[in-house]
Image 1 (cartoon, rainbow, N blue to C red):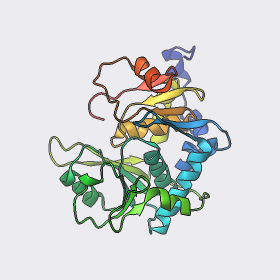
Image 2 (cartoon, rainbow, N blue to C red):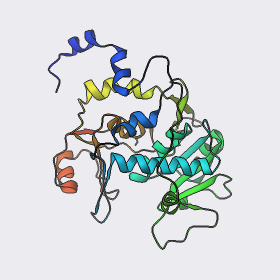
Image 3 (cartoon, rainbow, N blue to C red):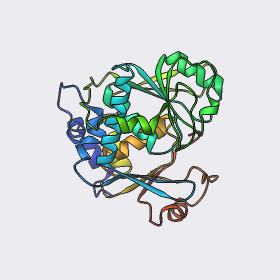
Length: 295
């Protein structure tokens, strides 16, 4: 941890140091894709470690994540998605959801996460309300989709699994796209994501998350988590909610490695996080973040 006290850190704090850490210049538009992943792409550091239900481990370096998100941005552009359009994601934890989020942000489109625990009516409301142009989803949750959707659907599927007519195969289409993409710069007050409330007390409400969210969370990353480049970070929040969305991206901004355990190993809290980490990866966790409540 930092040797500075809380009082010393507060007194020395200046937002200009945050902007410098993110590679942002005063008065200029910014590239979320560059800040989150592309500036780390020249290194061979691991960005993501994902463990499948069978225990198989999949790793993506920052270079691989940069190229995959470029391919996704190119796919969206080919589908007619433009800056400011909404791209919704009904996606479980895994590398594909991170690729989709970053690719959407690189294009300057607006990402709309949808929790995979929702049923057809809740999903339809969010898609209609945000006027989504594209939905990216996964074969494990596509049966929850309502019928008669007008959006283009990109679906993560396994080899040999036949998708419904009109669906776009995530893996196959990404392989057809080029690995280069010029990120669309955005103003810091432009919308980067729309995150809906649960709807437990009325109609769900969509909150606009500005591009500047990266700057807003950076002090938490630095002073709250003390997250370093050689750390392994376990964001336990679901990427279908705000906390998961923010935590995954903040770890990447810092150049750290994010870990995702098998989806099937969702133990009831409280449990020994360090023990579960060792069970899943054989390593000791450096930092873990657990939201309070859903997600």
